[in-house]
Image (cartoon, rainbow, N blue to C red; front, side, top):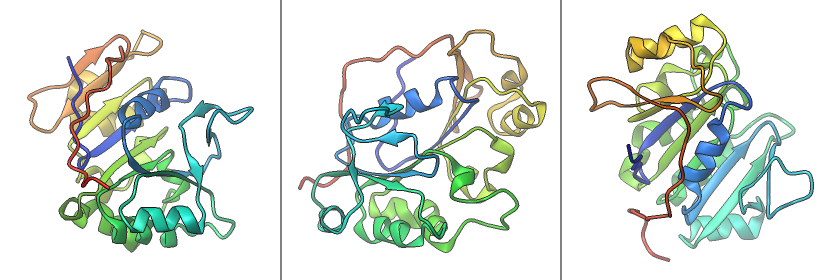
Length: 219
């Protein structure tokens, strides 16, 4: 199976820490020319920074980087967790800029468990962002905490190892009963697209050479 995710689609990746979900996200986004990463856990650093969990080839959010984003130029920007916990400024910048991809490394770091709904800025990206060429990829350790406003807009679902039955049941309601089975392979995962009849199991991700199919406007 060749995973072919378009740049304006919505993707949800779930799994325990160390199960492979962040590696998958990095591979899906490695050829993205215009990327904004929300990093509430502070684990994704830039340019082979010492002690980085993964190198994503990112620049830190700054006024010059924001100008590149809004002006439609190539940029790959990391946003660490704001001191006040408010992500609206960055999310509205993504929405205004258009033709880019948003990646959220942990959904509950942006939309805390128990929140009635995502902030208006994030809801706008998920519900109206396609018309502006905005893609959205989100990862989470706890599918039960991911708001339905995000789940209902996704075309792609990836499920790595999950310990709790509640989490697997939440995904089974979307991806089919197959995902209730415990994953025995260390980096195994289930894949589901909303146009498929059932989810497909893969023992481990194999990375193909980059073949770009992007709808982004050229700079």
